[in-house]
Image (tube, rainbow, N blue to C red):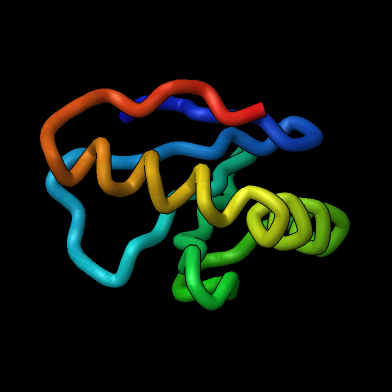
Length: 83
């Protein structure tokens, strides 16, 4: 599972062989959330309250890059880092 970014300590990852809708996994400590890319929203799981807004804001600003990463994983390729 490639880590494409870290947002205030939260790892942003894509898992291979995932199911639609396009999403990524955000994790820190024992917290893991599946975050839909469009619209940006938590689909499943949770993050600490002080991390949710940072991750959702970041995802909204990087939606195109996140979709590109999803498409790379869907094609069996490893996505690059998102800054």
